[in-house]
Image 1 (cartoon, rainbow, N blue to C red):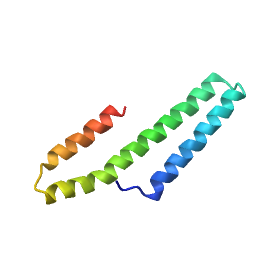
Image 2 (spheres, one colour):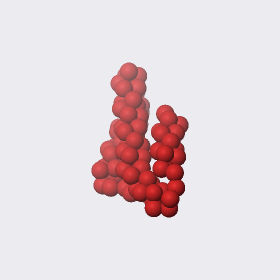
Image 3 (cartoon, one colour):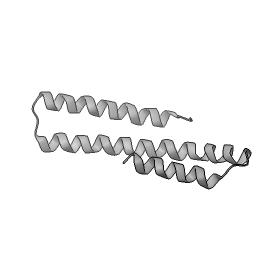
Length: 86
């Protein structure tokens, strides 16, 4: 799997957001604010998952072509992976 620095930065940012949410909970901040931050983390993770699939899909297709396999199957598996992750 290819993993570049932008993917790592996205996850580190999400990790920081989660720490912030935990602090908000400890400080008994407003529920609406906590939920808003949770939604932001979920969105960041979803975007990171999509990026991981997109970046690695190209490599998977090239490998499948080189082995004489079915590239449409690889694309279908990537789509299913994204759908399942929701």
